[in-house]
Length: 61
Image 1 (cartoon, rainbow, N blue to C red):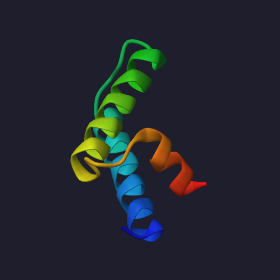
Image 2 (image 1 turned 90 degrees about the vertical axis):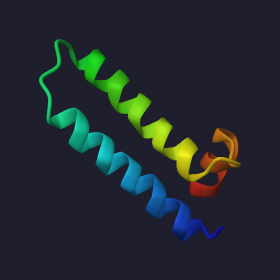
Image 3 (image 1 turned 180 degrees about the vertical axis):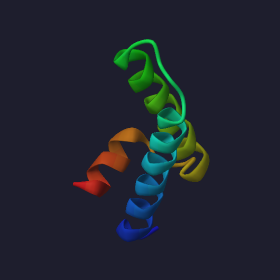
Image 4 (image 1 turned 120 degrees about the vertical axis):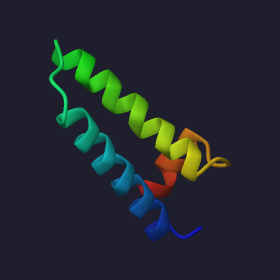
């Protein structure tokens, strides 16, 4: 998979998580951030099931 494709997937996952978290009122910023992270990483795992976090970070740097 090309770096540009992976960047597109990461950007889309982040935007989706932003939209979902932004559509709801959260009690704390920490709660909202935790939900954002959970949604983001869930989407990444589904789209890139054979890529580790370390590999993903090295591809994006």
